[in-house]
Length: 237
Ligand SMILES: [Zn+2]
Image (cartoon, rainbow, N blue to C red; front, side, top):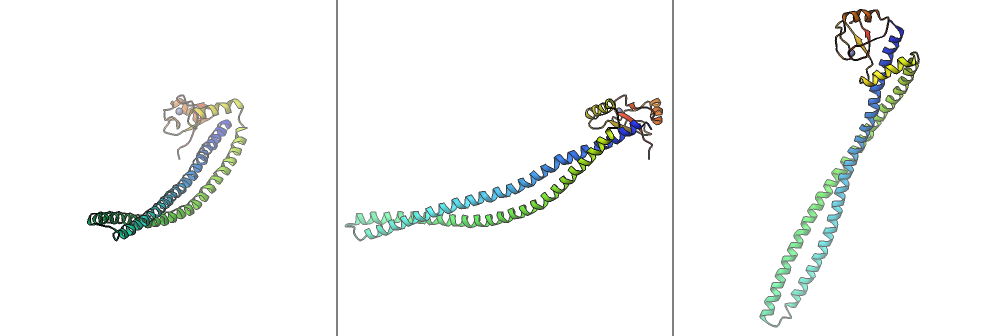
């Protein structure tokens, strides 16, 4: 076989590997981002719960103070019952006491509601903390795995690039430039095989019988008349 063709076939092999490795090198950092995002999400949920619990605690403290005020108001009103001078005043104070009682009952109910909410939030916070810890642990493991993969991909890339560069030096510059141009224009495939089905492995267009004979002889570089890729004959397995 024409030695330049052999070199082109090898280069194509290197470039296909490099493209796959570059794809991995771009994809893996995104996986790490997704791992971090999952932890951040669990953290945000926990923070929101803590904030809500804090607000509930403050709310509860306020309501408890209100209740103290209402209780004091009631004692005062009850004391006044002894000082009233007639029935009209007496019933006025009684009705005041009744409305204070209702206010107190409402306040107590609100406090109860807030205490229940507080309990619920405490339980949810504990769950969220457990979930966050679990996610952090999982994230540490997952990230270590992905980082290891990324390191491997980068070191493979470095090796393959060196091998490719060495092989590429065997070709005259114009041919190498031509190869690079086709590689770019044709989705990373500049060299395509043809087998007994007699179609271009790159674009699937039929190859003329006479060209097949020339391909088999492999004495010159040949291009697909349809897609412009370098062609080589490959015996069917
Ligand atoms: Zn073609």
